[in-house]
Amino acid sequence: MILGSVICAVLFLLFIRNEEKLTAERQQHVNELAKELQPVNGERKKWQDDDKAWKATLEKKTKGESCMLLGVDSMGRNLYDTVFTMMAQYGFKATFTLKDGQLPISPDVEEASREYIDTEQFREMLDAGWEYGISVSEREITEEDAGEDDWLTRLDEALGHLQEGRIGVPGVVFASASQYSADADAELIGRGFREVSILNKEKASVITGDEEDFIHINSCFLNQNNMDIEQTMDKAAANRQSMAVTINEVLRVSKDGDEDVSLTKFTSFFNKLKGMEEQGLFQIMTYSEYYDYRKQLEQNKIKLLADYKAFKQEMQQKMAELDQQEQEIVKRTIPEGFH
Image 1 (spheres, rainbow, N blue to C red):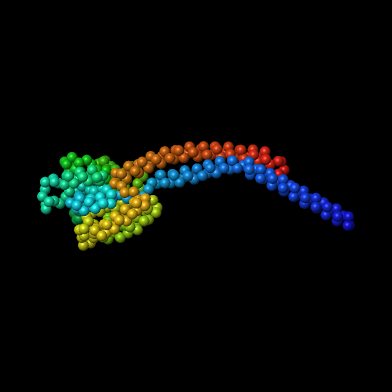
Image 2: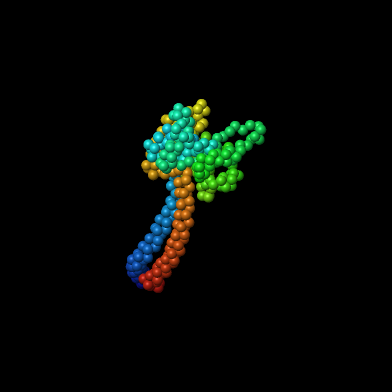
């Protein structure tokens, strides 16, 4: 019995030593394999990092940056004397409306009699990068009107005034939420418009659904009652969304405050916007600039997606080659029985 115990102990010891030897050999092969696979794993990681970089580029360059579109739904003398002059101090430009087809007046009109900007001021604003759109005043609906505002008819009359003054059809038409209907899109496109700015007096919102050829832009009035504009600006910048803000009159504040804005609120808004622009959180654009920007983004998206597809095909082929190289290295480095 003692002899049997000794033999068992010896055999166990030999087994342990053999396992230790196999473990050491196995570790040696593993170390050699890791060394042999370093170039393969390095190249594989490089392709994976390039793929992540591609996806980040696609996200940024196809979604675009946050834009702020500024509009002025007025061409009264306040447009030039106050809004244009003050916005120039911030380096901003905007799109103003030739409301109801009103043409700029002659500069020879006496100062005291002026209600609208004159032709020289009109030209100065355009030379400074401002652009014009068009809008028609809302009118009170009576029972005889069956609850409808024939704003398209009045829009045609306004366009007729522009034609008489040899002023071309603008790219954007401003309309109130009560005036605009999606059924009118075909009519607006037929008249040469590329964008419609739908004005909301009560609530600020971001621009959505701007990937169509005819772009719909939700705009809010900067007025005394609309208190959520600055909060919406912060959210839009954080989510890389765009906004449009429209001004009617500055300084003249009506009783209900639904369309006009005080000088204090005006400067507060533009001080904040300037700060956000300097931080790269907003790009300030006119409506036509925004239209061109969105179209350029769409073209970039098509090209980028095609380039990314070609990259992915090349990556898949290369990854298959790396997998094959890895299998060959494993076979060469790890002997049979050590797998």
